[in-house]
Length: 198
Image (tube, helix red, strand yellow):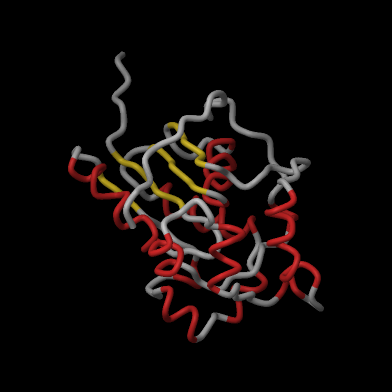
């Protein structure tokens, strides 16, 4: 029996951004006939980056990778067919975890957050220090300044994208970030692409 390829893609965002960060990225997929789904974390549903910057949800500070992945899994399993999962940053890590659980048809992890045991370079580590080192930092939302966000996390993105999509969020506790990469996630050469428009 021939297996039908999916025409549904789920775009998984990472930290400090919302589903709005996928707005321009989703258009070519939709133009090519794909159903594009952009689920988010429970406390972010229906909220814009401006809403979150103005009034960060208290529960955001204590959210864990386990909580986010469970919510995403529930949303994805309600779809009529297993989708292609495409995640960036922590969204890439979420995609790997979901694939490891058998959720999704295949996956793409774009510059994913590291799995347990992998440490990023000094620039990322210095960017992560403020929320990590402050008293009870794991349990409270942390808002980066626009310049820190631009220079430490989004330094490869266009300036307009960095400003438009930044939101305050706390790093989820490390308890849920340790998982092995799914064998279906491709590894290998990196290709540089033209900068995308926001």
